[in-house]
Length: 371
Image (cartoon, rainbow, N blue to C red; front, side, top):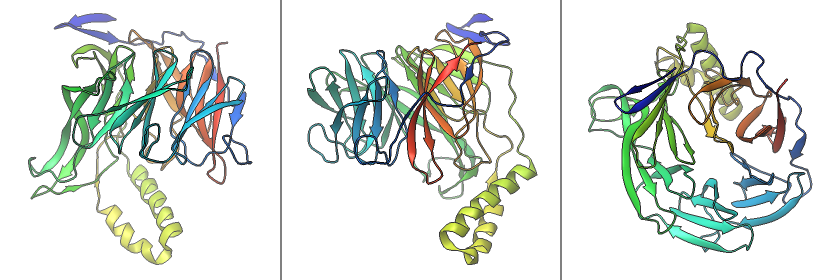
């Protein structure tokens, strides 16, 4: 159902738009990148990637601080970037986005600058973000602006003691000259504020999730199934809703979480350190509900993909994803292949990152099959 509330379109979905016969993501990839020889097919650390309109695949190789381009069959075409602070070099490759004119835009979080690289001419231009502060990029509208937000501070003497949703400033940066506007202030994360302004971690962690589309951005907090869509100027345009209730945090979940963390302690520091960490974890503040949301992305067809939380599991990629159409209708829920973190999609192709038993990353493309 679609209704209007004070100029905001409310889209509430009760049944999947894809119908009863939902598509499936094939478990076996039809393309895998990540070979054992040296060169552009070897990766050390991966977090994202893109399937371009013509089928090419763009992968930011974080370990090498470079962007590698492959054709639709997996053949390496070109590489740009590399460690450094000069033009065309990166020190913190934090975002990779499609840009008009057969180009890619790369954002460097430490240098606070954007680089637009032409895939056709190999030329580039660099734009400095004029905003001071600890801003993280989360997306690019078609041709601009670039969306950034402040990750926030751990020390909050400005807040009253207790469990608090802290707010973050959203910036829109122009890819033409690096100028910016502050367009919104939205909730970012939950913190337990203690007397004097110090903060303590809350478990499960409750963070906002965000993703940019060609004409705005999505923002949601995991307390209720409400996803806001905002225009490039920061005004809410649409609210996506489903009647889904959060799952209560049960004692067994807390136990599973603590044991998983203690396993990490054993591997890292040995058995002798376990009692100290156990006491710390058992005294930690635990919330009442499992967060509804985890990761999110907008694919090449402007569909929103948003995952469920993986808590109390530690580090495992989410299996459950909900997909929404560009106009906000829920299309259906999909299961990701085991161990695959979905980062992008286009048409019937789904791009994911998979780690082998040695934690070596591979880029995989899976088919989305409509039966």
